Length: 188
Image (tube, rainbow, N blue to C red; front, side, top):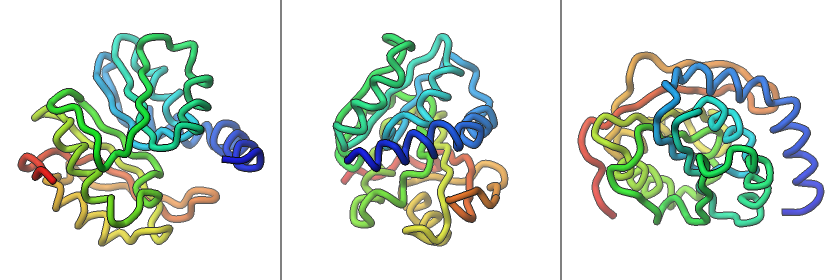
């Protein structure tokens, strides 16, 4: 990551985009005591809102890029031990049967296409049997709507309710929804 990327992320993700992230996190209706796993934390733009709605819960922030994880760590220092940071590839990392909720916010399209299925299977294995995966993804920006649904289905997820489509500044058309395990995801 370079200085320009840091400035762009700060301005777009943490200032201009803050309302977008906060509104989405609030729409998840978390109780506040869950164990939440964020796939691809980046600089922590979404993570800071997740941590703020988990007063008695725990947030695990995972990212493959240690530079961005350092940015997130500084940004979330005020949340103390309720937030942990893991430097790992989502396609290789799991914590079996541990999390109530996994979150993938504007990240699946950034995972190399050859690793997306494995990342979703690892997330499935990390969720408790009643766990849910909350996804918000731009459509047509690295992956299609059809690919997203196929990847989720192949990882063992079924949609809960209706997905929501909206057009967001800079991201264009997005889709968000909640998925639950229909069957345990297959091991790699």
